Amino acid sequence: MKFRHTFHVFVDNFSTTYKLLLYKLVLTLITAGLCCAILIPMFGNIVDTPEYVSLHASLTSMWEAFINFIPDELHRQVIEFREALDEFIKMLGTMTSTFVLSAVLLAIVYLINRFLSAIGTYTVGSVVNDKMALRARSSFLYTMTKNLGKASLFSVIYVPICFIYDVVCVLICALVVSISPMLVKFFAFTALMIVFSSLKNTFLCDWLPAVVHGKMSNGAAIGYALSRNGKDTAYIFSNLLIIQLIIFAMNVAALVLTFGAGLLITLPASYLILTIFQFVNYYDGNGIRYFLDEDTIVGPEREKPLTREEFFKGVDN
Image (cartoon, rainbow, N blue to C red; front, side, top):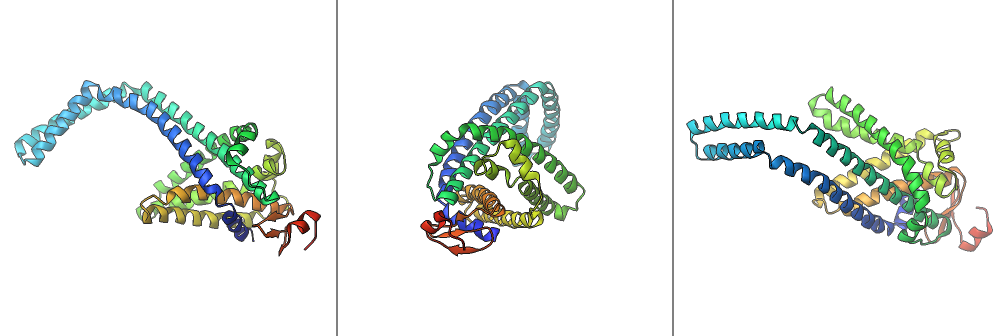
């Protein structure tokens, strides 16, 4: 039921995909600009070194000897290239502090990206909640501005938790992949990442809805989300696992069949679907009625078309 209702509400809120797409594009441009501001000066310093100039020249000469098929000259150029490469590697060893500083700055940019992305997730949750609870068509920009303080506080807590979890999961996946046979490495990594992502979303599923709809503090919402009393954790996990498999297949198909153009729709749609599932799960778990579409309202256990007047008067199914 949660699975079906999630996609039903997704269709009803599909226009939010375009708003989220615009937000993600702006965020991507900001992130790309910051990354370029860090990487371009670093690579510029490397390119200006005599060691790089010598390496580039020897590589060019070696390629020309190879193309012209001059064995003696090629042998000499290979030796020169190896010597130039050794000198270049030694030079890179003297720039350790530069690489460390760049890595730290890139990590900060990544966290800023995740922080702003989480604000977008909070905004999407608020817009979806307004539509599900009140049939209100809230403005994405207005909702973000109105809830910026709450969204920022949510992001400050949410991002470090997810970052640490993701790092641990990647390390575990890397370890498993390193000891897996060559033919199953990609399968093992993909399968584990989907399982770990589904587990994370299972235990944090009620956090955002509890803050947005339940008006809880983040601490109380986290406690409520992690508490599994009365919650069918296995059922929620299985639903999320299936949803994320569908999302993965949808994005891969968009990448392959449309040469990446379809990702402009499927990526923001993926975020929207996962956010909607959180609210559907929260509403169902707390026995709260909500709109599936213009004419259909669902309760905690069964579905029956009701008029708006019947809904607000509290008529039972």
